[in-house]
Image (cartoon, rainbow over all chains, first blue to last red):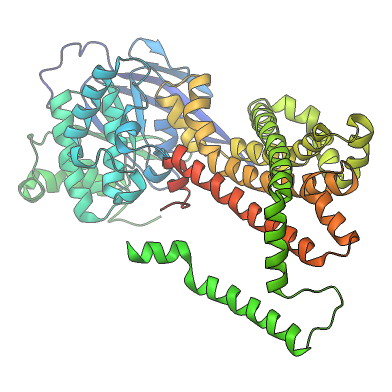
Length: 268
Length: 260
């Protein structure tokens, strides 16, 4: 059972994919990456997508985010079919340094998506709120490239949060960070998600991270990839880097996901 | 703070120049350099103050720089807007690429006699030549900067719901600023050079003509004084441009590693 009882409109899922197929055209011709993906992401749910590298995790996320066209099946965000980035869905990219505008201060980076939609004081308030959520109030007037990698990624997350999206799509957001920074950002994300009730689809190659953060873990397998494992993570929230990761439930779930990824038996 | 000042002034560099000048002076007095019309630096300094006292220098300097800078300003407006348009609309580039390449490859000097024919011996002719010369580097650098927008930033714009216009003003144009600045700097030095050429072979006015005239009048100290003035004014123009850019585009320039 996912642990998000307090969601209002749980009736309309954030995403529904039916028989989704995605074909990418590369140098070697067309390549079916994803095929026969059936997927429902409930409102307020935190779903992680795992899979071997090159399995199409990022492609799936890009399709949900309207950045990549599908070649078959249906994808719906809330009630509407996905054609281009949906209004209340924001993608957070892995490469934070390329995703931030180096000529804008942190504050103005965070304001980028809302500055033309809100009045100045409203915008300033939202920016301050988003920066507070990620603990970056003090760096608001700094340029992003003067910050550490972890702080830059928090700027990107704050920019997404400032949009007050109903869904965050995160593409290996902590993949390039060191273990310490990663752990503290995981906990921050956990807090923010609980606070805002935002739906999160989280692509990662880190099994522990997926189990630790999620309500549900999906493992992609095969070529073209389909959903090989769909595992509910019923660990109590809030989770803790030490106690949760020592609990037998966590270890059992971790074990199952490792197996689904093909570890233990043989390695592809 | 002191280190910063030292870097600005560059004492070692200044010392090298002073030493070279001394060497030059000495070599002539000792008889190592025996060109008939090569004056020692002290004579050039005299020539300089002569020109200064008659007001000739100021007048010519103003004439040339105002022509070069006007031409360059026109080129900046034309080059940046045309480069931006070509960067925005692919078909436009396909239609005009061949013409741009052909015109750019034509040595601008060859255009001077044509400009003289069209505009006569006027300051307008100089401005047109300076503008024509400067427009190409500005246009091409703007275009390249616009096209070079990172795909990721483009996607960030999509994801944050920026429309075409907002993406242009908030992403493409600022991202292209360092490239545009490169074009503007190249354009500025080229416009000065071509203004001088236009004065040497076309309109008899300004520093270019004064330089040639001093040579023909066998006044090498005045000629060299003009050469020095031309060199220094080029440096000053570039410094002023960069200072303005750092002030106006603080974020972009700092991000490009230019002012940090």
